[in-house]
Amino acid sequence: MFYSLTGTVVFTGENAVALDCSGVAFYLNTTANTLRRCAGIGETQTLYTYLSVREDALDLFGFADKAELDCYKTLIGVTGVGPKAAVAILSALTPDMLAVAVAGDDARAITAAQGVGPKLANRIVLELKGKIESFAVSSAAAGNIAAAKKAAVSSASSEAVEALVAFGYSKSEASIAVGKLDQNLDTQELIKQALAMIAKKL
Image (cartoon, rainbow, N blue to C red):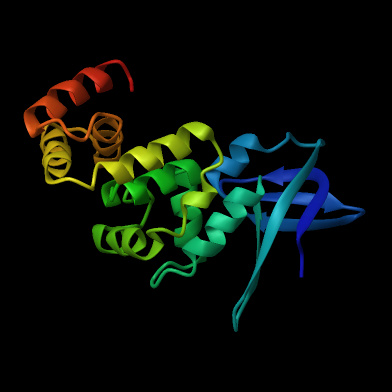
C-alpha cells in the first residue's frame, strides 16, 4: 500500500517517528538505527514503509533505507518473530551486523536484542542461512560474510573458532578472523594467527 513516505519530521520517540506529509502526520514505528539516522524536527525525511495488518490493529513501520526494510520483512517471516521482535533485533544490529552474525552462526549476538532469547536467536540463524547475505550493504560486511563461511569448511577451522569463543571472543569475530586465514593451517596456527589479527582489530 505504501512504498515510502517523504515529509517533515514532527515527532520522534523511543521507537517511533511522525512525518507530516502535506498536512497529514503519519506515525511510524521504527528501529533505533533508523532514529539515529533520522532528520531533526522540522526537517525533511524519507522512510521506506511496511504496513502490518492484524485483526485488531494497523501498524505502519518506517526504515531509513531499503536494506533495513527488506531485512525487517525477512525477519518477520521467521517462526516466532513478530513485528516488535524484528524492530528490537534491527535496533540492536544493523542489516550488515545481522547478516554477519547469521553467516557466522553467532546466535549470541542476536540475543543482544531486547526480548530475544537463545532459542529464538538460534531459530533465526537456522532459518535465515543463505537468505540474508544480500542485505549486507557494505563491502566490508560482504567480505566478513565470505570469511565466516570459509571458517566452517574444515574441522581445523571450526576447532579454532570454538577455541577463540572459549577465550571470550564472539563467534562472529572468531569466524571472520579464522576465515581470513589460510585454511590449510593446523588448528594451533589458526588460533595463533587469528589472535594476532583480532589484536589488530581485523
